[in-house]
Length: 109
Image (cartoon, rainbow, N blue to C red; front, side, top):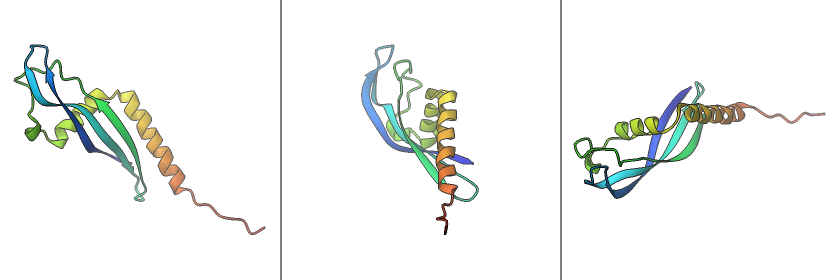
């Protein structure tokens, strides 16, 4: 099974960090899709929404919006989402794929 993340929207807000420094256009919310594709090309997706806490980010570590990459946002997601939740999401995706892989027949009797 191949799993990928797709970022669909970013929620922005000017936010003060713990040092009272204003972080302009800080990414505080990520809307995303987790996609699973099996070896036969059968695909399933799961939509999610994750809030990010930026209060503890120092001004030196802050990444401006125009410099943020999808790889960075995905790493933030993977840090913010519990491993058990990712396991649960993957299981739901597997279940969806299993249902789509089942063929139905109408008996002739």
